[in-house]
Image (tube, rainbow, N blue to C red; front, side):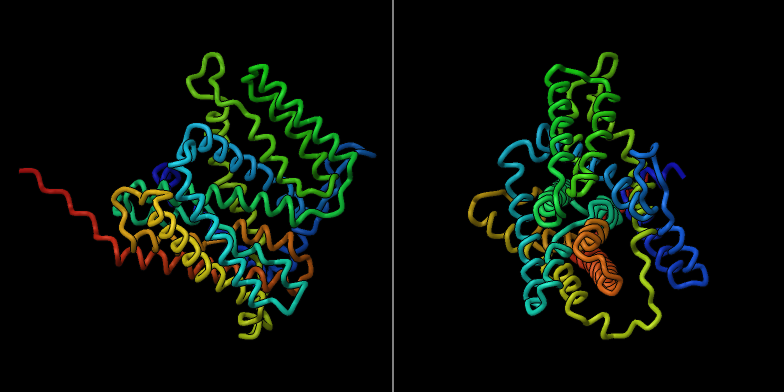
Length: 390
């Protein structure tokens, strides 16, 4: 059991199992119970300050804030001391991520151009799911050069950063300036304790909780509070510890996010009622925009921009990687899943379009995962078996 959970692919496998379970529950005799549970309201706090949200709302605004907090920690670590800490290191994944967001968005927009409401979903196929993509790549083991794995990880992290910016700019409802002002005070407090060299974890989490409540009431999506809090966490070790406060938090919450938060999100959001679903629901403009954006737009955008950057001398090719392998990794970039579902939930609230989004994201992501794995298996030689001892 420990070996399984320590494996790179474990998070992606659990994520897929949770999504399949959600799909099965929605199309089983337990569907009414499944929906009723997600719609159950759970008040938290004391009146008149209690927050009364449905279970689905708590998952998407509460648990996902923890996911975005972890993403923020990863982004800060990579920018300060990791694979994105220099212009040379960051240039290739940054340029590739730009292409991987731009081309799928253009494909989706071209297919849905005549429908201004459907165009709100242009960013859905522009995201990459880190856990799922890295999990599929990990199934190939040491056949994949380590620099290529790092390229995919950095690409997915920058992709998430782009998704965060898109959510903040394009998917924000009407604003409460008072709530935003209070959130800004919380962010200022985080900056102050960081400047003062505070390395204890609890002040950051406590102030982060305050910011989350303020952002939730402001109209900006609450998950962005997780990113804002993460960026203030210091990369300096606390007294008596060899790891920095940021690294300790990453290690502490990483498994909970991979095996708790993301599977629960998938379980709650992947349920699509298939009764009455016809081919028309799959080939509709919204699902086809998502499917083609993920399966074609992502690999074309990532590979074309990477090729151009390397040929122009703006970046260097990952050591030991071939062009076919880079294209295979670009195909895996089409696994949108968690982030695509999340953006789709923000873009549309009506039931009919929600089902189309889920169908498009699930089919596009699974097709990208299968195609990427098969393609990489074909273009990557198997590792030589170990020589027997004499």
